[in-house]
Length: 84
Image (tube, rainbow, N blue to C red; front, side, top):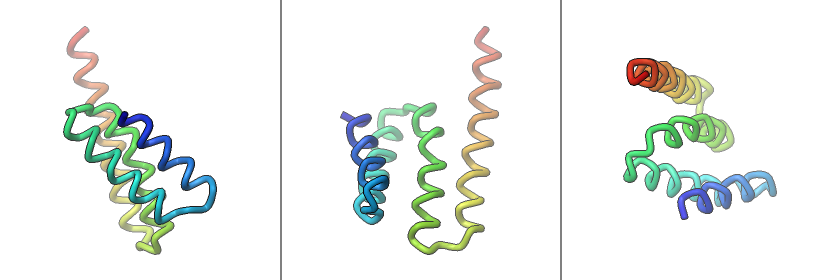
């Protein structure tokens, strides 16, 4: 179900319905976070940065989101290597 919600977000975005896409994105992120799906939450954060820019937020806010995504990728990679 969550993947479908994310797909609805991207489809809305690609068809120019940015506000609708933002709503789907938030719903998707909340769902992934609730499931403790760290990997999908992490790779979805850059979409939040895109939506922030589309909503007219300052580029610095999008940069914070992208920085958070990069840090999570580093941490996830470190955890993966420790499990090996």
